[in-house]
Image (cartoon, rainbow, N blue to C red; front, top):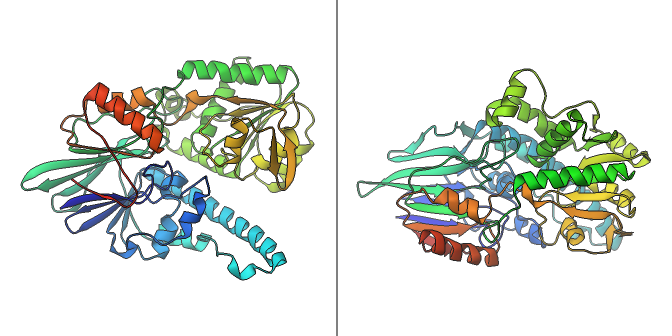
Length: 465
């Protein structure tokens, strides 16, 4: 019997975790954190399956909503093999160590406040520590190139294709035999658009009996990338020309590198007014170095640039900021500047003190270039809140707020359907990684354009294939 049970990213976009059972083999596809809307509390609860019984953990990519609970999985008994691309392995190391640091800092803050209230004993320990993260990488890892097969057991094989989401991202193909017939299950992971700035778009696949596909933007069409690039350039140049500063809350992976590549081009082409540009994110700085280490994952233009000894993500005006002191010193910069900092959803990180110091100034601009999960500070700002609270202080939102959606690392409805269109033999089509209303719209579009019926996965409910 073959079954799939979703324990995350089922009618929500975070906490990706899908348990596949093929006979006696148990394979977990991703083990991510729940984020936004108070979902973080769910990360601390026990898994609704026995981690010690899982044979394989397959990681589609290294965003925390796909890998963020892996240290907890290991702490709770997982002792199997972890399978990923080489790039995902390297990125996961820096992402999970950074996550452990954040969890520890949050714990210290919460505990200090609880102690003042006499409630110290009620505070949960951090979800995991740096030592727990080290245990993850002490496990057996199997790294695969795209379309390289690995045998899990007789008649069960796994391989990856490029998902075009971030560097090293993959969709998962699991081939097996059932009653002397070849079957294939595909988990899309997070799929990118065919046209990407710095990496190639998703690979195609010929066939799948069962397809589990993400639906983050299954209800809409993105603005064309070229329009988004033009809008970004106009907003940045106009703000600087009027002596304002530009704050860009940015995800450390992919989005930061895309922004650096655009600013590099503007700098070289004379489109950027003279200013200081701060990359204030130690995690993004580390991630950018990894992008240079894996030129094969970059688009042809960037791969050529890297191969010729150039750094596509560095240029004369860029100032990386690694230490806390360097970060705080940016608050004393009075002239116009550009600040790129995390977190991308403004729910922590160095962007917080930059917002505190610059959000109230109507000359400045806040440019959101990524999705803002409901319940995050970024979403509140995007939704038009005129007063927000940062570090306990009320801050007026007077800066101009821009949301540029065309940079999304997720394919839109037409792109998802376009990726599915050539796949032959689909008998089971299941929607994951999306909000319920968007999944319903996506299911209708799939029926209209492809003629397939879709099943919307629900938490903890098994589907028999």
